Amino acid sequence: MKRILIIEDETSISDFIKNELEYEGYSAIICADGKEGLNESLNKDYDLIILDLMLPTLNGFEVCRRLKKEKDTPIIMLSAKDSVMDKVAGLQIGADDYLAKPFAIEELLARINVIFRRKENSGSITIKFKDLLIDQGSRVVKKEQEELNLTTKEYELLVFLINNQDRVVSRDSLLENIWGYDYDPKTNVVDVYIRYLRNKLNPNDKEEYIQTIRSVGYIMRS
Image 1 (cartoon, rainbow, N blue to C red):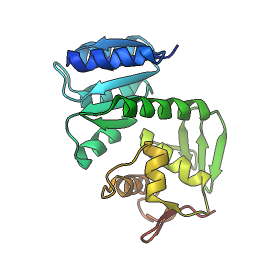
Image 2: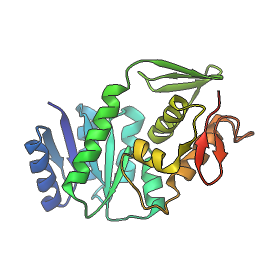
Image 3: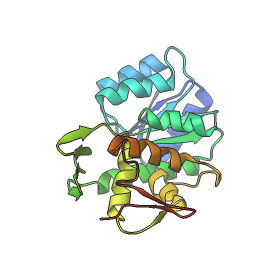
């Protein structure tokens, strides 16, 4: 049985999520403040964490940042803030997904399933692309033997593009396959993450690995 930690101070929301998760066959535990949630997540093993952004004692951004230094537990961040930059900030510090309140429980469950499915399919296959070496088991990316410090979304974006090398991948396809759902069509979150990834792969030649096909999407050519 998969264990899920809910770090949320609004009792009506945390109780509702817990009941729905248990109905779906998960084991769910609630922590009502940031410090308690961080200690719980560091001292015990959970398969996934649902983390509110606005928490007493320690906010969700700080909980996520500290936790990701120690563990790679998947995190879905919840927030009443729905701006693109808030989403990018949460994802950039290591959150695996971001869901704005209010939300439908069906959407939360779908995103949980996407994360678990990706984790189960990751395997331990090594991928090579030019001078990049990717160990999917450890999720380590090396360039000429030097390890690159990629966030969860940067890693998933890179692997997806490499697995589709020599094919143009649209922004809509990246949203669906990396983020697991549809954002506002006007969002630039894909372009933001492509820029982050390019800077880490080669800041001196931004299109050495990932090339832009104007008005269509991106491609990595072998």
